[in-house]
Amino acid sequence: MNVFYIIVGMMIVTYIPRCLPVFMIEWVVIPRWLNRWLKSIPYAVLGALIFPGILTVDKNLPLIGVIGGVAAIIISYLNLSIIYVVFGSIMVTIVVRSLLYLS
Amino acid sequence: MERERGLQAGYHQPAVDYDVSQDKGQLFFGMKAAIPIVIGFIPVSITFGMVSVQSGISLVNTVLMSGLVFAGASQLMAVNMLMMGAGAVEIVSATFVLNLRHFIMSMSIMNELKHILKFWKTILSFGLTDETFSLLAVRAQETKVNQYYILGLNFTAYLSWVLGTFVGGSLASVIPETISSGMAVAIYAMFIGLLVPAVRANWRLIMIAVTGAVSCLIISKMLSSGWSIIGGTIVGAVIGVFVLEEE
Picture 1 (tube, rainbow over the protein chains, first blue to last red):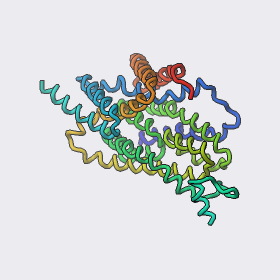
Picture 2: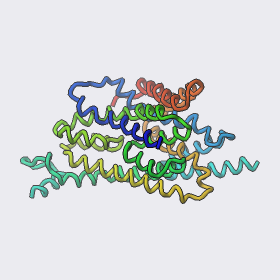
Picture 3: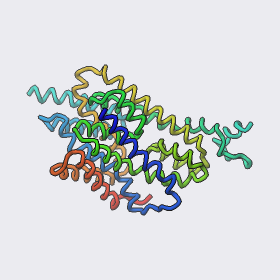
Picture 4: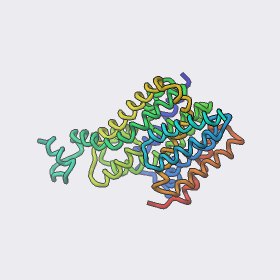
């Protein structure tokens, strides 16, 4: 149930910025620097989400997450669909993990 | 006859006496325009559904998140933060910061839609995403779009997002054990899969992402993981103010 309340909270804070301009457009001008800041947010958040979080994929061996991440970078750099990126990275992680834990 | 002209107007210059604003036929053109967005949404929503259910969030809540929030990156972020044990305030605050950019997009779109009733725009603004925005921004420059066109566009994209989430979430339980043991990396692979194509298109974006990551690491020494993601985002985006060019 707790997750449901979080979802409702997320819904409210996501809808407000989408909807407010309907009523504000006549009297607000956004400065250019603010425009660039807002546009940069998705890339900043992706960076913050990937690292250092990826080190916790395997709490005993942070290297496993790093290798899985490098695999994902390579696959997505080849312009393949996100499905391939995700499953390719999972496969590499599984193989690397079994190799590292065997040795 | 009226509808016939409306259909033609979807492709050609509108007839002189043709008023697009009440043409319900535009709904169909909006739906058709959504096809490329749907193709992009389906793999992402299926993967989101899988990752979310695998991480322990129920199928109902996973589908509800897609249906109520309808903002891909923030949904993945929320799943990730829940996995890290972040609290509700952190998750909702991070969602707010991440989705603030929709404010800019909405401002720019609403500027083009002054001919549409506020009642309609209040409803339609729920369907604003990075993808529907970019399509609509281009379209509104070319021709006058009406509420039915936007409704068709947004609703088709929305439906594919919610259905894809359901399919992915349902598949999560039939994934073989060997694969699900590697699922912990899936969400990071997804973040990377979203970031890399953007960086390929504009290399300056990597500076923003790296600054976000490094700031997040530094802040995580002092604050919880949830707040360090919020902090890393705010600091990383400041770099964007200096490195991004004007369009």
